[in-house]
Image 1 (cartoon, rainbow, N blue to C red):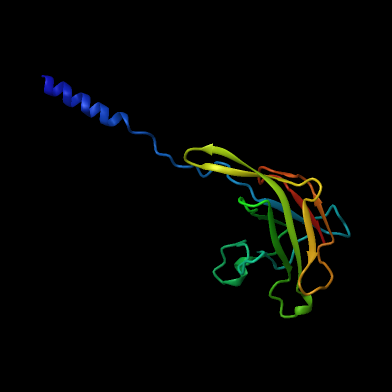
Image 2 (tube, one colour; image 1 turned 60 degrees about the horizontal axis):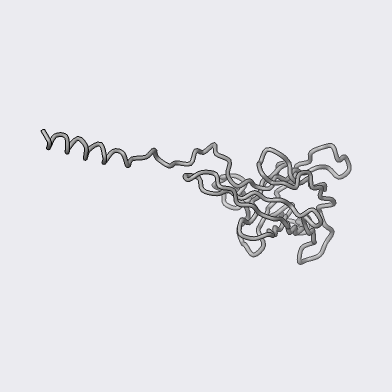
Length: 179
């Protein structure tokens, strides 16, 4: 009888250390990206589609993947009126090259501007399964630096408006770019 009780106790003890699986739910909010929408400079209330926009991080060769096209280069291009781009979670600045009409056969139509984003970061614990996420706040005095490309031409980006300096979700537009 003692052996049966001892066996039942050992069995119960072995199951008591089990926990539910630690799997991060796909719907859990993670580190948000910077949401940028594009507008017509001549009619600022109207959204405007960019044409073959390629966004490449400074020092990188490949651009941000905007679609899952199997045709190679086109996966780095977008022609919509809104994009979401990541910010570095381990630095307080992120620089990108924004190339309009990327890949165009006529090099005179290709135009590149550079934007460096300046921000502060806060790491927030989400859960044991998901770990941490980083929230960003664009600097109030100097949220970005906008320059022309290495080969100077006219900037295609005419004006940048900070709509929301706290980047804590991807549901809101953080920046508006007018061109």
